[in-house]
Length: 255
Image 1: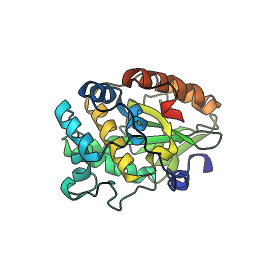
Image 2: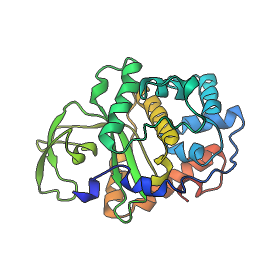
Image 3: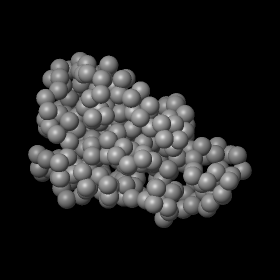
Image 4: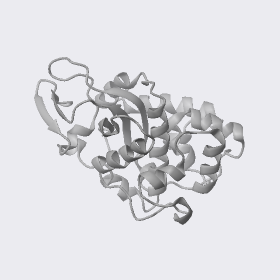
């Protein structure tokens, strides 16, 4: 199914221009704290800024976040942070969601999360032009599931980790049993995770939300809008929350 295939094929096309670096007000401990509290939906705030990974890592350490950028490079990529180049590129740009999940699980396992291999990163590209992505970090108790197809709800499908459609959230299986628990979700421009630097930030922020062990509400309603074509409603609502929290003009995260 083309609609759900490939995580970064489109993103790589954007990576020639990438996220333009601009100055944003991220120089106070207060602002960083507010951004960190906003979770992974604040990723564009860092991606569009000129803040170095080293500086962001220091702020995370000072704020006491359980997972820092340094730990992400160590656990996910197997790299010493002191040897990571300033642009964050260690030649490990991720090209598919199953690999992204594997890296994400390494971070959770490094933080002693029980059943780390049952946490998955999922994504759905916007149905119009694939410019935006709806992500979720979910706990799924099974690696073999039978669910109803998202685009054809009357069709039951059996999915394993080798299927692209496995890496989207499912609230219930075909028997009506609860399947996925959503611990974090966020919608971002595809270009914002086209560089390894920003992927590392994404993993770090999402892992911190999972470690809180508190399911985040609202995903299933957002997904319904997203699939129906009203994805901009989801993006605008999230943008308002993030921009209000970090003190930038509305529209900053969805340019």
